[in-house]
Length: 174
Length: 193
Image 1 (cartoon, rainbow over the protein chains, first blue to last red):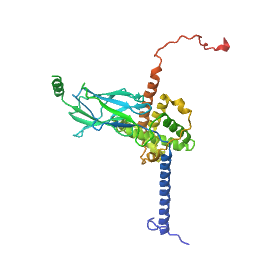
Image 2 (cartoon, rainbow over the protein chains, first blue to last red):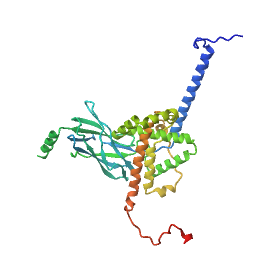
Image 3 (tube, rainbow over the protein chains, first blue to last red):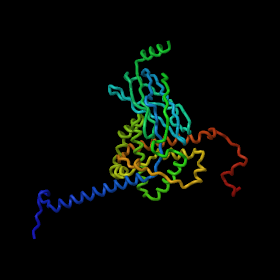
């Protein structure tokens, strides 16, 4: 009896070998998809964890303007309409200018996290320092309340040259 | 510093759900504890890892989270972490499991600690719990190490702040000295006296 060993393995591949490979791949894929299906069933059968949704008025937006090197203050009033306490942790998203400049603001929320009793209304303030090197323009992003399923409040911060910002404040006063 | 006008937002229950009440939160907690007897340790821990990764992905959308994520990814921790994650196939394991909504669960459990009708609700146990249903069937997403680390960070920071807020109303002053009625036993103990 002689056994031929081909130098090119592809040349010697039989139809049976191809079928075996296909069958193995099919079984592996089937096992993977079955596992995924069972995991999603497990997820759907898991106990629900009631959450919180942020509800804003349609046109709610936080706007501020200032000169590089100064700070702006974003202020938001939050009312807990749920029947139990809520934890609120405000965070700012990166702010983007139309030219493509992205600013990662070092916002300082006060308080950083709040425990709101049912029916309680509390004011959240975010001091946002404007870096001295920040190019002028209008930066847009969102104030996000961490962990809430939906929503965010649009934020828009206009960065103007120091003289323009001072002139604007003077005009407002007169 | 400029002072813009103040906007108002409201925190409400999600539409189509029973909402957050002491009863529903208690039912969720008891159901979670009961579920632990039905799932393997690997599934429970894998779901927690997936939950931290899901929270990390959310936090990575914020300015502070994005900075942290970038730093973690570019440092040695990121390189070694990815090597571990790949070699031990942690990504495959955690990504295949439904993520635990860890922040919701934590906040709900904290709310129970502050509920004024908890004793009354404990008296009517067992309360049937709702299942996650359609909400539980989230499309699978890769559980990356940096996201999981970011999730742990966000969770830990909030947990610390909330625990401090819980203790704040009854927190004794720092450096407080209390005069005791009985002097404490010395180091040698009462037997050797």
